[in-house]
Amino acid sequence: MTTLRDRVRKALASQAEIEADEERADAVSVPGCCPVDALPHRARASVSGVLRSVTLRPREGVPALEAELYDGSGTLDLVWLGRRSIAGIEPGRRLKVDGMVCLVDGRRTIFNPRYELRARPGE
Image (cartoon, rainbow, N blue to C red; front, side, top):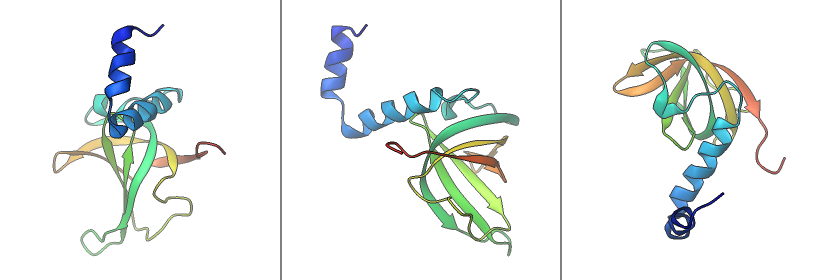
């Protein structure tokens, strides 16, 4: 049941806030997934979200594919070491990832995560 306060907040929300609410709702609907803003440091976790960016960025001379996963509550950096590309890993794609969460330069990061491609909305 929505309250008057909820309806007013939704009416005055920016497009970014509306999209973040939709992403959060989608992310928590995936069984076993944790919101990015609640991820524990140095613990295994599962997260679901949409890829905002994918970049090839060498790390210490080794190719590394980096992606930013967004779930509406925050962002998580994903890094696949030794990879130049991965089929299906592209901006706008929905993923469920599993791995060990660590902090790199103050950002939550998972190296070489296991991943599952999820259907895009409307598919």
